[in-house]
Length: 158
Image (cartoon, rainbow, N blue to C red; front, top):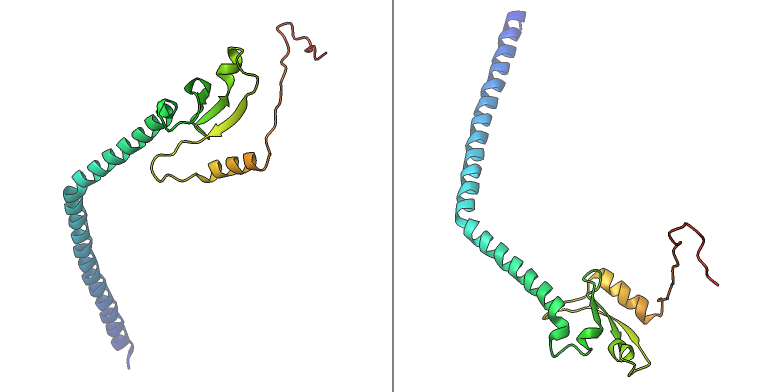
């Protein structure tokens, strides 16, 4: 085979590759356009559904938060509403059970209860479960922190 024949074959092969690439790109463009059209059609068809779902989820979240804060006023709440302090995160309430009676000098014992309010079949989050475990295992303590007064003097712990 002569050199000009090899050159012709090489040029023909290269032209064949170029034509195959152009045909492939044209087909890919068609598929991309179909995919874009399908996505746009899906957006148009499902936008209302997505918005309704988003609004429903938002309502549900708001109802849950309102229920949590209103819980002391509901009959299922076993403590005096005046003894409950809303925290919200990581737990909903700290209840100082007996505080109101002790404050009015009608009681002499206060229990501290951490309360998490759930609506329906709500489950504790991982952090809420860890806090519950700490309380149940007695890993709870009291710490009084005394700050320096305005004159930057050491506190009198005497």
